Image (tube, rainbow, N blue to C red; front, side, top):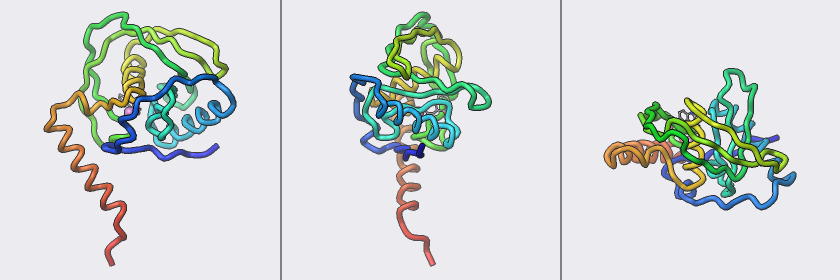
Length: 173
Ligand code: GNR
Ligand code: NI
């Protein structure tokens, strides 16, 4: 297994819309395993393929305390079961260091394929519902900062761009 590099806002590759996975084969399973390892290494509760520059509709999640319950969703589709707005302080591995309140649907039904390509469904509420909506947004080229005011988004963009410039330039003597 190997770690993958996580793209950071405002990288334009985070804006690509991912294509459906045609067949869940060994090469797809290998990417999913590397995504799980990368998610754990980065201490995230979810990771969408878009974030590691793979533009296929798949994502991984683990909302357990101890990295005990990795979940895989290939070609996920969401139906809203309860559109009641639910606010949650969201963060994103592609927007490191920033947390802001975002409103999502309270309860959703997720239909997806598992690591064997078999279909399954789950009802999601709470953090699971928040996370799956956040991850599916990534597959559609959307980020949580898109729900913030233009001013807040611009501030975050400028600060991350500055950090990226500093990471690129050699350390001053
Ligand atoms: O690790 C993550 N935490 C989180 C917290 C609140 C709402 C959504 C998330 S997902 C995020 C990992 C990530 O960036 N997934 O795309
Ligand atoms: Ni994210």
